[in-house]
Image (tube, rainbow, N blue to C red; front, top):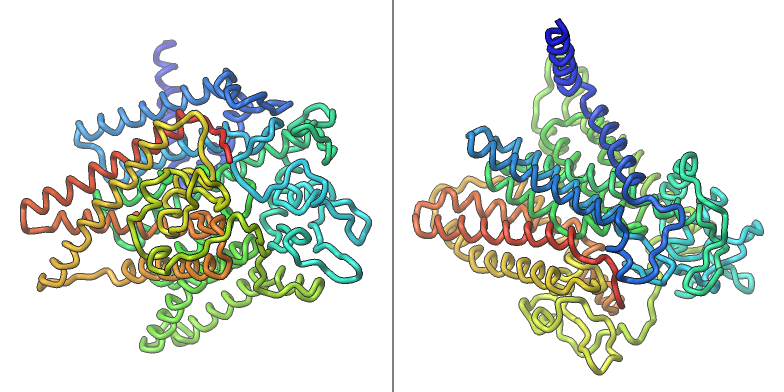
Length: 595
């Protein structure tokens, strides 16, 4: 009788779970469970009421972090085993394989995002423009409030402490727009508002002592241990954002009709780029702006195919939010604008349907009007307000005048087109200074983008083997594609049957042209190497990886057997090499950086 009762309970539970995850509310359920899992993991393994490490070696001496890495590694191995098991049983569909890849990526991003301190008391960090522990960047605002400082850290702390955003510095009756005066205060404010109020939310259940923290020998901010613990908890928010981004990247590839193994290769390469690990941990606005740009791309593709009003509005919301985090988010609008124009032109040629009161072009025009009413206030609200309030130009960039970073005597071809080049093989890190006689400054934009996508703008400590393997795997993949793409182009020209996915071609080409073109203009206008960073144009990771997946799909249809085998084999092996190196590196390397 007991056994029968147990079986009924088990069967009822399984049935309930199946129904819950197949209902229209399944994404809310998955989202809620994901948040609970993330918070539970953080408080079990990571949370420290006095978050500090005494030195670089102290990271691996923390048993909570060590256990977290080991457990995550075991879960990743289990998911890999599950994938091979399903493959061996001929039950591994593309969707199941993509789900396993996404779960592994979620664990991988979480490991770095949660376990790497944003900053520690010993003066170590993995990003710049934060301005911890200084006094010169703080400013007594017009209402008498002493703000938190002009860096990203100070902006977030001002929102958390006072519920307001820092102002532009006022000196001698005029606003100061020099670098030392404005720092990051010129940026749109959405990222800082979201981060600051998220800290307030976490303050409901994160508690620590109110002792003043001594940061690198200074008590400049009067920061308490509780405030520091709350600031470190921002990693939860950014990791959740990167988890959701994995979903949108997959859906983008599906919307441009990548299928089969080509889809899986593009998806895996795209989501295992270490850039997303950094965005899960960095407290600057590039990650959130990029996230909303990716969401905007997805809904633009949906709108082209489905033409729903809510999709047009969500495009406007996404672009607006991207720009409200960082004005460079407007770049995605340049990519999307022709897509919206295409829909409108296409609608003009369509006939009115009997069950519709309006002709197609009129409905599209209303949808585009709704898009405009959303995107312009959201995207340009802060710049216009700053222009009226402070006289800050609409398109403003805080000037950097550090002579050590200045690049000179370099030709356009060598800096922006030539690859590989001397920078590629000299160091695996980006080196900034032109004042150091022992090293040569990086100048190539292409090489700098590869390096910064793998490591950021600094070098990892105690992790040379992992980093060198990761760099070598990325170069192997790049060189293989440089050899295979000309062959595919020639074969395409020679082939009589030319079936092209114009949406995919447009999307990939426009992102690469717009974002790389902007990078060329940006670093030419502000010629300092700290501007040569993938974080400014991270969206190009998607078309680059999509190009690899598309190439694999093309070689699957290649009718010359030796080239079909070579092309598929080379892409598959180099992709596996890169993804494996990326996973292993970010599970095992020390997170500490040095300048």
